[in-house]
Every structure is written in C-alpha cells, then in structure tokens.
Image (cartoon, rainbow, N blue to C red):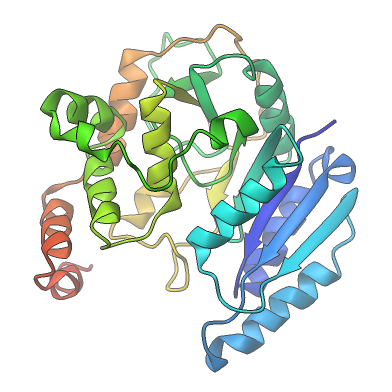
Length: 306
C-alpha cells in the first residue's frame, strides 16, 4: 500500500492547485490516502486567500481518500507540521510530506514509496528527500541516489520509528559545544549549527533543523535522487523559504526512473559538493551574526539585496 501523503497549505491558492495537479499525475495518487492540513489566516487581509485555498482542497477528488483538517486559528507552519505528521504517524508506519509551494515530477510517488520500502530496515537512513539541489555529480558515480548527512524539507518522507525519536526541545544541544561534534554536524552545511543555535535562542522557529539534529544524533543519512523529483514553484514574496540566494535552489524536475541500491553508502565527493551548496557565504554569515544578536539584521539584509 502506498504511504499516506500529508500536504500543508495556507494562503497560496494557485500554488496549492499546481501542487495537487502535479501530484495527481503520479500513478500512485489514486491509491494514496491524502491528508491536507489547512492553516487559518493570521489576519483579516489573509482570510480571502485562505478561503480560496480551502475551496480548492474541498473540491479535490483525485486521490483514494482525502482527509481535510481546517485549523480554526492560525497555528503557524512549525506547529502545523509537527502536530500533523505526528497524528498521521500514530496510524501509519511511514509518511510523505509536502508543502503548498512545491511541484513534483510524474514519478515522485514511485520514487518515495520505493525508497521507503527499500530502506525501512536501515537504521542509518533517517529520511528520503525528493528535492536535490543542482550540485556537481562525479562522472564515475554510477548510483542514481546518494546519501547526505542532512534531512531536507522540500518534499520528504520518513518512518514513524524515526520521527518519534525526535526530541523537539533539543535537550542534547550542548554536545555541540564540542568543536569536533559541531564540525561533524556541519558536514551537511555550515548553516546547520547556526540555524539550530538561533532556534535554541528563540530567534527563529524551525521544525526542520530539529529533525536534522535528531538525524545527526542517530548517525543517520538522508537518501537523495541524483536529479530532483521536487522543485519550489517560486521564491516569491509569500513563500516561507525566501532567502537571499533563492535562484541557486531552483532545479529542473526529472521523471527519469530510478533504480535503488539497497546497500548504498556515503560518497565523500557528493557530501562535499552538497555541503558546499549549503555553506553560508560571508554576507549570509554576517546576517546570521546580526540576527542572532539582534543588531540590525533586517537593515543589513535589505542593504545587500540585489
């Protein structure tokens, strides 16, 4: 049976429709349970768009069964995802998760379901990512997936036993005071420690960095396709993921069938390329420092916008 799919939507009607359209083109869609979590408006201005989104999801019929939860008050993305995924994984062994600003390939569900089945008994695999950034693939690399020490939030999947290992209070944060442990954590990108540090000091709220840290504590990797099965529809002003260098995250969707290697092992060259993609540059590092210490982060961010 295909894994259940969770979609988190808010106030982007066209993006929501685009995601559902792309997902419904997958052969497994008509056999999949779909759970849609719709967050409420934060203010009166957002209400019409939220209602437009809710009308779209109420009219959706291209999946086996559709379960809709419409929040009466705004929860925010972090609470929505933690609560929503937890509730689904109380009933199922695994789950596929998407947000409303994503678009998927026509064999996204095939890849995700196959990977969930293939790697379910490997304790060193933490999650499956449908999104892969455009990084350099060594010409002699023959596998069609690779492992990285970082979970990703743009179209992902995991198992209930992994999800329930996450400590959302991050009680083991202090182990990163050790420089060696911090360097190991940052193998997925030097933004990881800084993002978790801001999370722990109340500067941001992120479920994803805590999920990544839990994977690190469990010495586990995420499986990525060599070519992405997911892309962010647009890095516009309403997306939760907008950053200073959004264009480098844009990819072309691949519908190429994937043969999975059940015994796949980490490849140092690919991990290095992946880390390099995520590493913060000088300006971003300055922005992190100023945001962390509350000294004019937004002014500097706007100053360096292009």
